[in-house]
Amino acid sequence: MNTDPLITPLGSEENLSRGIDCAAKSAWRRNRRQPDTPQGVALRIAEDRLCPVLPVKRHLELLGLLCNRGQLTVREVANRFGISVDTARRDLDLLARQGRLARAYGGAVAIESQVPQERKLMPRAPGHRFEPTPLAQSLHQLVKDGETLLLSGGSATWCCAEALGGRSIRMVTNSLDLPFELVTSADVYVLGGKCRPDARLTVGPVMLSGMNINADSAVIGVDGITAKDGLTADRPEDALMASEMIAAAQRTIVMADSSTLGKRSFARIGPIASMQVLITDKAPPADLADALHDARVKVIVVGPEAANPLDGD
Image (tube, rainbow, N blue to C red; front, side, top):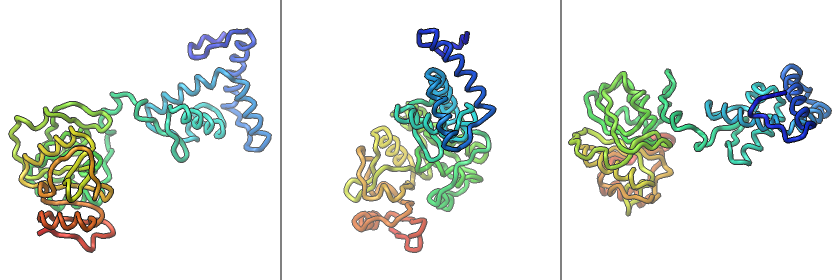
Protein backbone atom coordinates (compact mmCIF):
# COMPACT_ATOMS: atom_id res chain seq x y z
CA MET A 1 0.00 0.00 0.00
CA ASN A 2 1.25 3.49 -0.79
CA THR A 3 1.85 5.34 2.49
CA ASP A 4 2.64 8.73 0.99
CA PRO A 5 0.73 11.22 3.23
CA LEU A 6 0.08 13.48 0.26
CA ILE A 7 -1.88 10.74 -1.54
CA THR A 8 -5.20 10.23 0.19
CA PRO A 9 -7.35 7.35 -1.19
CA LEU A 10 -11.00 8.29 -1.45
CA GLY A 11 -12.44 5.56 0.77
CA SER A 12 -13.08 2.41 -1.25
CA GLU A 13 -10.67 -0.39 -2.14
CA GLU A 14 -11.34 0.41 -5.79
CA ASN A 15 -10.08 3.96 -5.32
CA LEU A 16 -7.09 2.73 -3.33
CA SER A 17 -6.01 0.30 -6.04
CA ARG A 18 -6.69 2.98 -8.62
CA GLY A 19 -4.27 5.28 -6.81
CA ILE A 20 -1.57 2.59 -6.87
CA ASP A 21 -2.23 1.98 -10.56
CA CYS A 22 -1.84 5.73 -11.14
CA ALA A 23 1.64 5.64 -9.62
CA ALA A 24 2.62 2.87 -12.01
CA LYS A 25 1.18 4.73 -14.99
CA SER A 26 2.97 7.93 -13.98
CA ALA A 27 6.31 6.11 -13.75
CA TRP A 28 5.69 4.46 -17.12
CA ARG A 29 4.97 7.80 -18.77
CA ARG A 30 8.29 9.20 -17.53
CA ASN A 31 10.05 6.70 -19.76
CA ARG A 32 7.64 6.56 -22.67
CA ARG A 33 5.83 9.69 -23.84
CA GLN A 34 2.74 9.33 -25.96
CA PRO A 35 3.25 10.80 -29.44
CA ASP A 36 1.69 14.15 -30.30
CA THR A 37 -0.93 12.56 -32.55
CA PRO A 38 -4.71 12.71 -32.06
CA GLN A 39 -4.60 9.17 -30.69
CA GLY A 40 -1.68 9.99 -28.39
CA VAL A 41 -3.35 13.12 -27.05
CA ALA A 42 -6.58 11.20 -26.42
CA LEU A 43 -4.67 8.49 -24.56
CA ARG A 44 -2.85 11.05 -22.39
CA ILE A 45 -6.15 12.69 -21.46
CA ALA A 46 -7.66 9.30 -20.65
CA GLU A 47 -4.68 8.43 -18.44
CA ASP A 48 -4.98 11.69 -16.53
CA ARG A 49 -8.68 11.04 -15.94
CA LEU A 50 -7.84 7.62 -14.48
CA CYS A 51 -5.72 9.37 -11.82
CA PRO A 52 -8.06 11.45 -9.63
CA VAL A 53 -5.59 11.55 -6.72
CA LEU A 54 -2.06 11.91 -8.09
CA PRO A 55 -2.64 15.26 -9.85
CA VAL A 56 -3.32 16.79 -6.42
CA LYS A 57 0.13 15.77 -5.23
CA ARG A 58 1.64 16.91 -8.52
CA HIS A 59 0.03 20.31 -8.17
CA LEU A 60 1.38 20.71 -4.62
CA GLU A 61 4.88 19.77 -5.73
CA LEU A 62 4.58 22.06 -8.75
CA LEU A 63 3.59 25.02 -6.57
CA GLY A 64 6.45 24.31 -4.18
CA LEU A 65 8.93 24.21 -7.05
CA LEU A 66 7.50 27.40 -8.52
CA CYS A 67 7.70 29.11 -5.13
CA ASN A 68 11.41 28.30 -4.88
CA ARG A 69 12.34 29.19 -8.46
CA GLY A 70 9.96 32.06 -9.08
CA GLN A 71 9.11 30.91 -12.60
CA LEU A 72 8.77 27.71 -14.64
CA THR A 73 8.27 26.91 -18.30
CA VAL A 74 5.71 24.41 -19.57
CA ARG A 75 8.54 22.20 -20.79
CA GLU A 76 10.21 22.24 -17.37
CA VAL A 77 6.96 21.16 -15.72
CA ALA A 78 6.49 18.36 -18.25
CA ASN A 79 10.04 17.07 -17.81
CA ARG A 80 9.98 17.36 -14.03
CA PHE A 81 6.79 15.34 -13.56
CA GLY A 82 6.99 13.01 -16.55
CA ILE A 83 3.80 14.31 -18.13
CA SER A 84 2.97 15.59 -21.58
CA VAL A 85 3.31 19.24 -22.52
CA ASP A 86 -0.47 19.39 -22.95
CA THR A 87 -1.02 18.05 -19.43
CA ALA A 88 1.54 20.48 -18.02
CA ARG A 89 -0.24 23.33 -19.75
CA ARG A 90 -3.60 22.21 -18.37
CA ASP A 91 -2.11 21.99 -14.87
CA LEU A 92 -0.84 25.56 -15.10
CA ASP A 93 -4.15 26.81 -16.49
CA LEU A 94 -6.07 25.13 -13.67
CA LEU A 95 -3.80 26.52 -10.95
CA ALA A 96 -4.00 29.97 -12.54
CA ARG A 97 -7.81 29.84 -12.45
CA GLN A 98 -7.57 28.92 -8.77
CA GLY A 99 -5.39 31.99 -8.16
CA ARG A 100 -2.39 29.93 -7.05
CA LEU A 101 -0.01 31.11 -9.78
CA ALA A 102 0.11 33.59 -12.65
CA ARG A 103 0.31 32.37 -16.22
CA ALA A 104 3.00 33.85 -18.45
CA TYR A 105 3.96 33.25 -22.05
CA GLY A 106 5.33 29.71 -22.22
CA GLY A 107 4.99 29.00 -18.51
CA ALA A 108 4.04 30.51 -15.17
CA VAL A 109 5.37 32.78 -12.42
CA ALA A 110 4.78 32.65 -8.68
CA ILE A 111 2.34 35.17 -7.29
CA GLU A 112 3.67 37.50 -4.58
CA SER A 113 1.55 36.06 -1.76
CA GLN A 114 2.95 32.57 -2.33
CA VAL A 115 6.61 33.57 -2.00
CA PRO A 116 8.03 33.13 1.52
CA GLN A 117 9.13 36.32 3.23
CA GLU A 118 12.66 35.03 3.79
CA ARG A 119 13.04 34.44 0.07
CA LYS A 120 11.91 37.97 -0.76
CA LEU A 121 14.66 39.36 1.46
CA MET A 122 17.35 37.00 0.20
CA PRO A 123 20.34 38.77 -1.41
CA ARG A 124 20.59 38.55 -5.17
CA ALA A 125 22.56 35.63 -6.50
CA PRO A 126 26.33 36.20 -6.88
CA GLY A 127 27.10 37.63 -10.27
CA HIS A 128 23.62 39.11 -10.70
CA ARG A 129 23.71 42.70 -11.91
CA PHE A 130 20.95 45.23 -12.29
CA GLU A 131 20.60 46.21 -15.92
CA PRO A 132 21.32 49.95 -16.23
CA THR A 133 18.61 51.98 -17.94
CA PRO A 134 19.20 55.15 -19.96
CA LEU A 135 17.86 57.11 -16.97
CA ALA A 136 20.41 55.49 -14.66
CA GLN A 137 23.24 56.01 -17.13
CA SER A 138 22.46 59.72 -17.18
CA LEU A 139 22.83 59.75 -13.41
CA HIS A 140 26.41 58.50 -13.75
CA GLN A 141 27.35 61.75 -15.47
CA LEU A 142 25.92 63.86 -12.64
CA VAL A 143 27.62 62.11 -9.73
CA LYS A 144 31.27 62.74 -8.89
CA ASP A 145 33.72 60.70 -6.85
CA GLY A 146 33.69 61.60 -3.17
CA GLU A 147 30.02 62.64 -3.09
CA THR A 148 27.51 61.55 -0.47
CA LEU A 149 24.26 60.32 -1.99
CA LEU A 150 20.86 59.70 -0.48
CA LEU A 151 19.25 57.11 -2.73
CA SER A 152 15.64 56.04 -2.32
CA GLY A 153 14.63 52.45 -2.94
CA GLY A 154 12.11 51.53 -5.61
CA SER A 155 11.86 50.56 -9.25
CA ALA A 156 12.99 53.96 -10.54
CA THR A 157 16.32 53.80 -8.70
CA TRP A 158 17.04 50.04 -8.55
CA CYS A 159 18.89 50.25 -11.85
CA CYS A 160 21.34 52.86 -10.54
CA ALA A 161 23.69 50.25 -9.08
CA GLU A 162 25.31 49.32 -12.38
CA ALA A 163 25.47 52.95 -13.53
CA LEU A 164 27.18 54.03 -10.31
CA GLY A 165 29.57 51.09 -10.36
CA GLY A 166 33.18 52.19 -9.99
CA ARG A 167 32.29 55.51 -8.38
CA SER A 168 34.02 56.16 -5.06
CA ILE A 169 31.01 57.50 -3.19
CA ARG A 170 29.25 57.33 0.15
CA MET A 171 25.65 56.22 -0.16
CA VAL A 172 22.76 56.21 2.31
CA THR A 173 19.72 54.23 1.15
CA ASN A 174 16.59 52.49 2.30
CA SER A 175 16.98 49.83 -0.40
CA LEU A 176 17.73 46.27 0.68
CA ASP A 177 19.11 45.41 -2.78
CA LEU A 178 21.56 48.17 -3.64
CA PRO A 179 24.09 47.54 -0.83
CA PHE A 180 24.91 44.15 -2.35
CA GLU A 181 25.56 45.79 -5.71
CA LEU A 182 27.70 48.74 -4.57
CA VAL A 183 29.61 47.22 -1.68
CA THR A 184 32.87 47.00 -3.65
CA SER A 185 32.92 50.61 -4.82
CA ALA A 186 31.03 52.60 -2.20
CA ASP A 187 30.57 53.04 1.52
CA VAL A 188 26.94 52.04 1.95
CA TYR A 189 24.68 52.81 4.91
CA VAL A 190 21.22 51.26 5.12
CA LEU A 191 18.47 53.23 6.84
CA GLY A 192 16.40 51.56 9.52
CA GLY A 193 12.64 51.51 9.73
CA LYS A 194 9.78 49.19 8.95
CA CYS A 195 10.67 46.56 6.36
CA ARG A 196 8.51 46.37 3.23
CA PRO A 197 9.35 42.95 1.75
CA ASP A 198 7.26 43.47 -1.38
CA ALA A 199 9.45 46.39 -2.46
CA ARG A 200 12.64 45.24 -0.68
CA LEU A 201 13.11 48.50 1.22
CA THR A 202 12.60 50.13 4.61
CA VAL A 203 10.09 52.89 5.34
CA GLY A 204 8.84 54.94 8.26
CA PRO A 205 9.82 57.76 10.62
CA VAL A 206 12.87 55.92 12.00
CA MET A 207 14.80 56.80 8.89
CA LEU A 208 16.67 60.09 8.67
CA SER A 209 15.30 61.88 11.72
CA GLY A 210 18.00 62.52 14.28
CA MET A 211 20.86 61.32 12.07
CA ASN A 212 22.00 64.81 11.00
CA ILE A 213 23.19 63.61 7.60
CA ASN A 214 24.56 66.15 5.14
CA ALA A 215 24.37 64.85 1.57
CA ASP A 216 25.48 66.31 -1.72
CA SER A 217 22.57 64.84 -3.65
CA ALA A 218 19.30 63.04 -3.02
CA VAL A 219 18.25 60.70 -5.81
CA ILE A 220 14.60 59.76 -5.51
CA GLY A 221 11.86 58.13 -7.52
CA VAL A 222 8.29 59.43 -7.53
CA ASP A 223 4.87 58.14 -8.56
CA GLY A 224 3.56 61.41 -9.93
CA ILE A 225 4.60 64.93 -11.00
CA THR A 226 2.19 67.74 -11.82
CA ALA A 227 2.54 71.50 -12.10
CA LYS A 228 -0.03 72.07 -9.33
CA ASP A 229 0.77 69.31 -6.84
CA GLY A 230 4.48 68.91 -7.46
CA LEU A 231 6.09 65.60 -6.50
CA THR A 232 3.78 62.89 -5.15
CA ALA A 233 3.94 59.25 -4.03
CA ASP A 234 1.41 56.44 -3.77
CA ARG A 235 2.19 55.77 -0.09
CA PRO A 236 2.47 58.34 2.72
CA GLU A 237 5.54 56.59 4.16
CA ASP A 238 7.30 56.84 0.79
CA ALA A 239 6.45 60.53 0.60
CA LEU A 240 7.84 61.09 4.10
CA MET A 241 11.08 59.31 3.23
CA ALA A 242 11.52 61.31 0.03
CA SER A 243 10.83 64.65 1.72
CA GLU A 244 13.38 63.87 4.46
CA MET A 245 15.98 63.00 1.85
CA ILE A 246 15.29 66.25 0.01
CA ALA A 247 15.70 68.25 3.22
CA ALA A 248 19.06 66.60 3.97
CA ALA A 249 20.61 67.18 0.53
CA GLN A 250 21.99 70.20 -1.27
CA ARG A 251 20.62 68.97 -4.59
CA THR A 252 17.69 66.71 -5.49
CA ILE A 253 17.67 64.55 -8.60
CA VAL A 254 14.33 62.98 -9.49
CA MET A 255 14.28 59.94 -11.75
CA ALA A 256 10.85 59.48 -13.31
CA ASP A 257 9.68 57.75 -16.46
CA SER A 258 7.05 59.34 -18.66
CA SER A 259 4.18 57.48 -16.97
CA THR A 260 4.57 59.74 -13.92
CA LEU A 261 4.54 63.04 -15.84
CA GLY A 262 1.23 64.85 -15.39
CA LYS A 263 0.03 62.25 -12.89
CA ARG A 264 -1.03 63.09 -9.32
CA SER A 265 -0.58 60.44 -6.64
CA PHE A 266 -1.95 60.13 -3.11
CA ALA A 267 0.72 61.69 -0.86
CA ARG A 268 2.54 64.95 -1.51
CA ILE A 269 6.34 65.02 -1.29
CA GLY A 270 7.03 68.65 -2.14
CA PRO A 271 6.65 71.38 -4.78
CA ILE A 272 8.30 71.37 -8.18
CA ALA A 273 10.97 73.72 -6.82
CA SER A 274 12.10 71.10 -4.30
CA MET A 275 14.08 69.36 -7.05
CA GLN A 276 16.93 70.71 -9.13
CA VAL A 277 17.22 67.98 -11.78
CA LEU A 278 14.61 65.79 -13.47
CA ILE A 279 15.73 62.77 -15.51
CA THR A 280 12.98 61.32 -17.66
CA ASP A 281 12.44 59.49 -20.95
CA LYS A 282 9.93 61.86 -22.55
CA ALA A 283 9.45 65.60 -22.76
CA PRO A 284 6.95 66.78 -20.11
CA PRO A 285 3.52 68.11 -21.16
CA ALA A 286 3.31 71.85 -21.78
CA ASP A 287 1.94 72.95 -18.40
CA LEU A 288 4.46 70.87 -16.50
CA ALA A 289 7.29 72.03 -18.76
CA ASP A 290 6.38 75.65 -18.00
CA ALA A 291 6.36 74.96 -14.25
CA LEU A 292 9.73 73.23 -14.45
CA HIS A 293 11.18 76.14 -16.39
CA ASP A 294 9.82 78.69 -13.91
CA ALA A 295 11.33 76.69 -11.02
CA ARG A 296 14.66 76.53 -12.89
CA VAL A 297 14.67 72.73 -12.86
CA LYS A 298 17.15 71.16 -15.26
CA VAL A 299 15.32 68.51 -17.30
CA ILE A 300 17.36 65.73 -18.89
CA VAL A 301 15.43 63.74 -21.48
CA VAL A 302 16.91 60.39 -22.52
CA GLY A 303 15.77 58.02 -25.22
CA PRO A 304 14.14 58.93 -28.56
CA GLU A 305 13.41 62.52 -27.49
CA ALA A 306 16.89 63.16 -26.11
CA ALA A 307 17.76 65.37 -29.07
CA ASN A 308 15.60 68.16 -27.64
CA PRO A 309 16.23 68.28 -23.88
CA LEU A 310 14.67 70.99 -21.81
CA ASP A 311 16.83 73.05 -19.51
CA GLY A 312 15.59 75.15 -16.65
CA ASP A 313 18.88 77.02 -16.31
